[in-house]
Amino acid sequence: MSTSYQSAIGEYPITIEAGKLAGQAGGAVTVRCGDTMVLVTATASESAREGTDFLPLIVDYEERLYAAGKIPGGFFKREGRPTEQAILLCRLTDRAIRPLFDRGLRNDIQVIITALSADQEHYLDVLSVVGASAALTISDIPFHGPIGLVRVGRIDGRLVFNPTASEMQESDLDLRLAGTSEGVVMVEAGAREVDEDIIVEAIAQGHQALQDVIDVQKRMAEEIGKPKGEFSYFETPRELVQKVQSWSNGRIWEALKRFDSKHEVSEALHQLRRELEEALGETDQPEELRSAFDEVVKEEMRSGLLSEDRRIDGRGMTEVRPINCEVGLLPRAHGSGLFSRGETQVLAIATLGTVSDEQILDGLGTEESKRFMHHYNFPPYSTGETWFLRGPKRREIGHGALAENALSAVIPSAEDFPYTIRLVSEVLSSNGSTSMASICAGSLALMDAGVPIKASVAGMAMGLITEGDRRIILTD
Image (cartoon, rainbow, N blue to C red; front, side, top):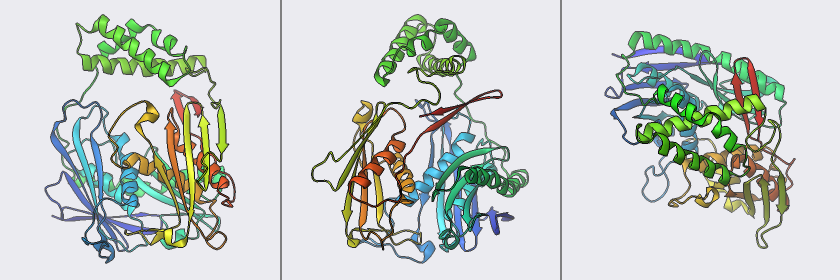
């Protein structure tokens, strides 16, 4: 039996319907706003995946061009590999829902989003995240939601919630916020140099704008939700964690804070793990022992930060690693910039082309071409590892788009600078914050190529540690 629920985010009503389509999925809903509609399903495997030490969650987005009355281009005339926008929508949904699963869950969980209709005014990403949350909420899958997603824009100095694509053309802010009824889960934003207090206000008001669609999903769970299934969870025995703590007795923190480089820290951890396995390996399972060791490492690093107010490399909480910048490294490239921050190093290369070099977009969005592109490459040698090179991974697509979003606000208009711009970031060494280093290196390369950007742009990773009422903000 089909059941329909009405909600709203901002000024536009949203309809969530369950029980009509995809009845054999664990949970299935359609979400509609205007003439944009998605089908979202959530299904879990019956048994846990063996040999897995993480939550095997996958989010897939099926971008069907019939949703906008289009026929795919190319020879085969059917959808192929996911577009960049499709991958970004998958990552956005994944980041919003992943924190709300139990960490010890090892069953495969698959969320599939299918675009059924797109009016190219109401955004698919908002409906997709709401649909993923609703499908999981009414399914038999354990999920600590529900959540909502809202896009916050700023037009003529006024915050607007869930604006249309036409309205966003006039906005100087594009902020997407996912949250539960209690707090914020995920934030992603781009802006044209707006003040920090505006961002804070947008987050606060955006969280309030989510509450109605969250309340509707709670009502769905009560009225049509399935009983949650019996799932097994991997949990490290607390007795084993306490045994490892007694064995360590602060040795881990004392060993780690003697070293500055990533390689030295990794070697110190490997040595400590070997010593632990020699001491306790005969009485405890290797998998549980490794998990307990990792938990104690995190606990000791956390307590060391809080008690000594310093990090393992000796830096204070707001201290940035040494920075080095160079330009003009490549003789035949139009522009190049090398940015190093500690052991993180990124080389960015800028190439200028004509209008005919613009990227042609064949998707459900309103844009048909793009004149500024940023591509991010993360080779295995950057972390001292090896793996097969099979084209860009989802992470590389996402990091490339993140840096592109940061730099696009300062790119001159086509009228002022009639060139296509391609920026490529090659990660040469990684010890955290490579996406932010790509922004810095990209800014250098653009200036070296003679692109009249409106301002230089820098990126910085930030972290937060809380302990009771105490909060520590980590810079870099």
